[in-house]
Image (cartoon, rainbow, N blue to C red; front, side, top):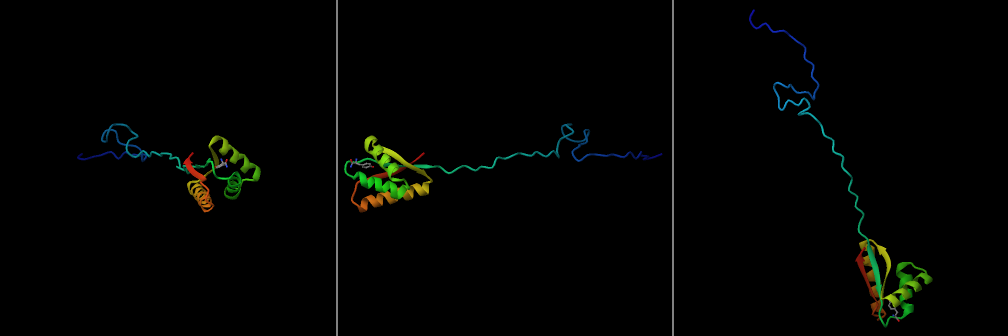
Length: 126
Ligand code: TYC
């Protein structure tokens, strides 16, 4: 009887390999799926402190007016911050996004220049 082969049913799962004919002999080689969890990157934008600097010439009432007008502070809050700047030399008047901080610094510097006061306003990364 030439070429008489027994027909034996073979059931394989897709992840299986035939150990005698493939690779390392690890029966889980090849088709194994790896799911990598990724963290969504939602970095908050940086914030900027807006600072007011003291000088010897800008009138106190002008500084109070600036704080009320451009920083939405009431009169008492504005007077308190003005006095802090007057005594300590500098104070943070608010914390904003880069764009808003830049706008407020520009508004204060322009307003002071138009009134010929040397008031200085700057911003720095928090
Ligand atoms: N030092 C000023 C004065 O005596 C007042 C002043 C306060 C000026 C705050 C600037 O940011 C300032 N007239």
